[in-house]
Length: 421
Ligand SMILES: Nc1nc2c(c(=O)[nH]1)N[C@H]1C(S)=C(S)[C@@H](COP(=O)(O)O)O[C@H]1N2
Ligand SMILES: [Mo]
Image (cartoon, rainbow, N blue to C red; front, side):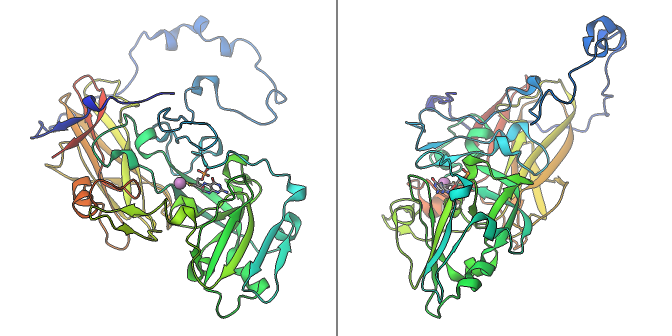
């Protein structure tokens, strides 16, 4: 799907909008005489026997949900092999991303690995180089953790102003999955890391053969060699049969189709950590090794792809927040462009380095809204504005844009990506 938003549509709104005042709570209920209540002839599903249990050995969503799909931005993905698509955040709730909706980022397309031929090698500065089959891996202790994976380029098109019209496109290079995997520490201990082994180089089995340097402290801390996502085998798109999980750190380091881990004494400075995934600053210097993903949040509903379709009255605002440094104890939201901030209601499990869900219920008075959310993480860090980021990093960056997002909602409920200054 194309969603190239003409830059002339970018809007910079100044000044304040009337805030939604306190209105007597409206009742929300269907109207008497509604044929969906009274006319059984319009409800065929209660008049014949439906398909039995054999109809879908592997279940799929209702055909009425066919619009809930990953989408790409055509002008961002010149070809389909080195490609990106985006998670439909505005269609989801809770904190877990369903497997079929996890965004994908491939540098060499999806590798279709035969699990029988799968091998994981650990070599380099170790006492005993080892090679594991999948069956071997199943005999090590495993753990379960929900973690978000965010591509460092998520929101990267927004550095110079409001660009893409929808949170799927501005913020959808993220997914949040419950992984089952073996602590990498356990496998490294089996091989015996030599005292000068200070870095690891995970390598993918895809045509891109992706590699990244990761410091040993992180490898021994919370990295997982994962083989299950949300309870079932990893999807081919997500690295079947085995991927590296690097909690809280940029998605590029989460090597998929993991086939080898080399132990070394210094970083390798390969392509993905030099020409890519460094942040060019105003003065021409680049930030190196920006691994952690800073606290960030976005309102998913309402948003450009999910306008308000009801009139004034009770309105539910919701969104997601996450931090690569811990949990999200608090999210603030504003409906009037920052004149008044309210503490959102957090709901759902609060796991470290995992997505959090927030809600804010209010009475919409039908006047235009300027919606923003601002995450606080468990270290005390507060999500900055985009202008605060630009002051420090200039506008040449692509990666690590965790600035506050604004949606403008007009009287008709139509929402648009804007910036306010
Ligand atoms: N082997 C391999 N691993 C890879 C990639 C790749 O192209 N090949 N892409 C990386 C990038 S840039 C990101 S953002 C994440 C995306 O993970 P996903 O496809 O599960 O969303 O995988 C990372 N791991
Ligand atoms: Mo990425």
